[in-house]
Image 1: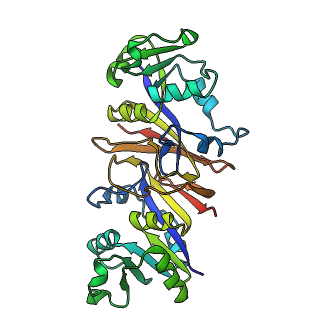
Image 2: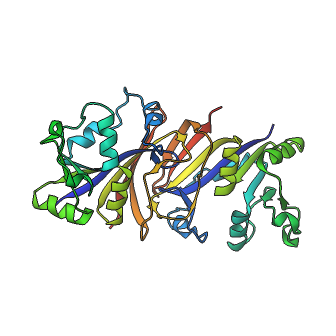
Image 3: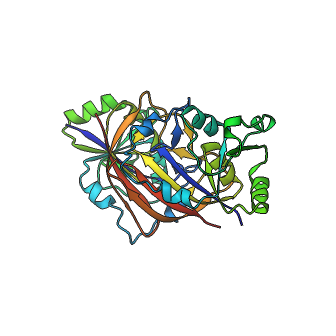
Length: 178
Length: 178
């Protein structure tokens, strides 16, 4: 069985990036000496699924940071070859969330990390997110790329745990109910 | 000196009410046996400032709940008399936030509770909010009346404290920097 998990940071007003994709406001509020649990989270992840926006942002930010297979959901990119430097590390897919999860289940992929606002939203709408770890940075941006979006019905959550860090980040862990 | 303080609950996706003003989703997730600090908060408040939306919602919800003077910011209502039953308890004003705070300072009002999404947003835009206590309920609504809105520049916050409750509510306290 394949399960999808979100682990993502937002401003207090719910943005994961500025309108142009900038995440410096988050980097400035991060304290690299703090352990926000990403290592423990990623250790239990078999595959990372992201959208084109996140993929292109990651490419921009420097060396490829992932040691897990990455699947990029993008109709546009799925018609192009994977860049040579990322062969074996990245795949592109035009599949939608439900189809994608069935494919991954057939491949024996267990836990999938879904990253990026649009992908998290699409998976939530499809009822496919198992749990969410949201880390809130102490700033209001006023505009940007939102983590959450429209859904057809309420998504009921079960609070699991919450903790704060000296940096001012507040991290809460929720399980999606039902 | 008059200072403005917010104490408000939202869904995890940042809504204070559904599009029609409904807050049952919050009531259902509240545990009345838990002390979320409202009593301590309101004990130090001299006046409550709210918008017309919040005022009308409060009227609908039953007996007038406030033992503090309430000021309703509404150009429309400011041209009407205060209902007889609320005389001495409520006033209407057409003043905008900066002007309003100057008037309250001249009257010797100390701490003002600003309530409702539009009023909190207007005070934030005017740089008038001193601190925010945000209580997050474990649900995604997908749409509704947002707590936060557009601002001209980042609002930098200092994290003060955070706590969670068995009900699943997570409450964080921030001071506005600068």
